[in-house]
Image 1: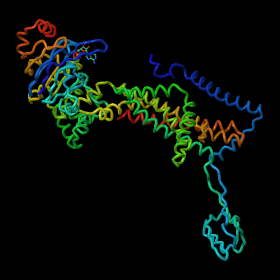
Image 2 (image 1 turned 135 degrees about the horizontal axis):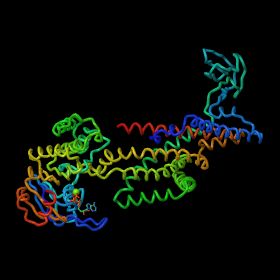
Image 3 (image 1 turned 90 degrees about the vertical axis):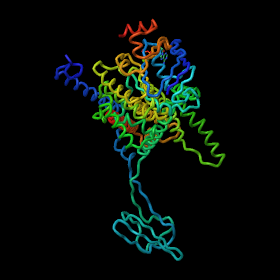
Image 4 (image 1 turned 120 degrees about the horizontal axis):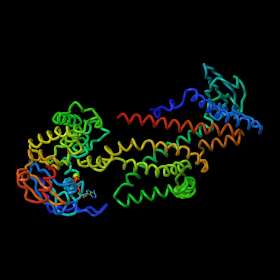
Length: 336
Length: 243
Ligand SMILES: Nc1ncnc2c1ncn2[C@@H]1O[C@H](COP(=O)(O)OP(=O)(O)OP(=O)(O)O)[C@@H](O)[C@H]1O
Ligand SMILES: [Mg+2]
């Protein structure tokens, strides 16, 4: 009778397992098809090139700043102190002892390599990932601030506030994000940077125009989400709070917003997930975020299949972590 | 304590309704006034005008000498002195019973935590549910919720309590416990304005009964007057329907 609550019971186990098998067969065929197609076009997979785009070892050379003679090479455990001197000067270099190129008494010239060592360095993809995370995080924070203010203005009785909020929301939602990014960068950005320069100040990097465009875009959607959340709280709650003498602000802060928060959380998470994905558009205004970094790697390494799959997987990891985090928050607020 | 003079209120949305027409009445400190009348007669609107949840279009309302319709009046200060209990309780569901009662004490009265806490516990004791202090409102019965709502209003040390059909949303077996709390309050000398259909309550504790119809006060008198010799035909009709 109650087979709605448990879909497994609606078919016998052998049938269920059969369809699970079909699922994996489909999955496998898709991968096989791609693989066979790549063989047909003679694509050479080079996954081994991928790790170095995350982390690689950089060789750092330490060179002499003066002409002279190596007076002393003093090794101590992992480090060594190389002293170079001439008639007028004496210089010491502390270097890791892994690859020392000179011996005591060697004659050296300005610019000669004294020693080298290798250091781990974040690859371009990891740097791009960091920029993507940074842009998204700032855009989310500003988006929340704009959205809460906008949402409260949207339900205000004051026409200046209310109509400003409505205009803002309609304006932003009515045009493509790409156009807004261009306006932020090529119109507002040009204006602001030229003004700053005419006052002798530094230009603002394109990243911040990118963050601004994303924040403004998200802010409009968050405004609507916050408005709906606040309006979903029964009027009686406000009346009870106000009848106790609370001000509008106290009532919002202690009574309405905490309750609205719970209903706002799921649509908010969806909004932020699309924000993270939309941050991939910032590449066109020279922000080197994950997708831009990926494309740069592709042009030098010529392995587009591997790199684009990698980028997709990284976006998936970020968005999935975010939705897990929000589910955790939801569970937490539901119990209190 | 309450002085309402020529108060009128008209709603225009969804259609024009004269909810209050030239209502004038005085309520003295310590008096218990029961407001009765058919549905839509303006009882709730009258009560809500008294604490500025609705804004009267015309007339004057003085609470303890302060004109609440004056723009210069700080309405939040007046509301803190006027407790209100709603038909649908309106407890804050995201806060425990204790927090419901301490919240306004803390943010409006600026009382220290311990003092607010102690006050809340005393009041919970008084309304007979001190064992539910840490429960959430949704886990309480209707009667219990309404008693918490009364305690929440009392925590502000109000000078007047307004009750808008406090027992109408309750199962019959829970009405008594709420009325008992209200009777105790009345005996302690609280100024109360009560909209209710509980005629037993009116007979027992009301100093005065006001009968409203079509937004106007039709008849005012003692409970004995109402239950023995009402004068107006509309009053007689209404009483015959509910008694
Ligand atoms: N916010 C409002 N907007 C529009 N009309 C309203 C509003 N509140 C009340 N009214 C109207 O005003 C009139 C009086 O309503 P009120 O709620 O004061 O009556 P009541 O005596 O409390 O009735 P009940 O016994 O049903 O609670 C009704 O006709 C009602 O439809
Ligand atoms: Mg009513």
